[in-house]
Image (cartoon, rainbow, N blue to C red):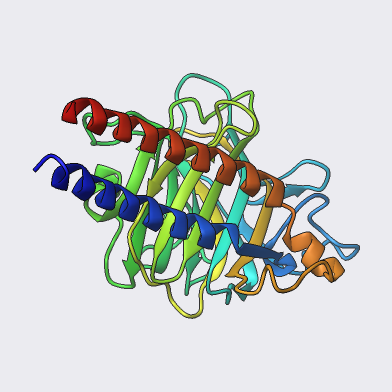
Length: 309
């Protein structure tokens, strides 16, 4: 009886570790390609004072050496910035550096990141249109009626062109994921948000605002489907309360799983070299997780032996 029990536990443990190893192996083979058409950095504009890949409007202003300001710290402003081309990548990662700041103790209302069919329109949802089709990520800095939740609050909503955003309750009814982010406004650390999407699998949202290179996972969803034609956009609004809402940079990457990583050998092109920039960090993560699995295995094995004795 004693022999059967540890054997069953060991088989179960081996299966779990094997599944985890398979997931990590897949993650280690993920490669990225920068997408210039959906990325943005200073000076933002070309010689004709236009952006090749983005349109902007509403109250948006651009200071070429510093930021794209969606709203200034003034009442009743709405501004937007949208890509001219749809984001067609199946899997992608978008990293945005932004800054929300202003004078006084009261501030609002917040800003949004969009991946929607609609583009380049002002409206009542953080400066863009309601009844949108696609994904909205909201960085909400003003609390309306949502007891028990600490603001600022970051949340996601999936729209189908008929569902409205419930501003009175800060979007609670249609939230698919969210987290409190106290300290994200006026942080001394460069504030960033990173969206990672794998089609039919998951959307992960992480934040950097506590310390540089310290990412906090906000939420991860299950499978969700985005429109086949979706534009990347940003918007913000102020009401009776106000804030500066600035976009500092946008970096978008296409993500894909390289099934032939090991077969390719050392003959890589310049593009391939760029795709492998994160390999050192990935190796460290693999090493750490491998050490953890071995340690966990030894602890469980020790427990079984002691229990059996």
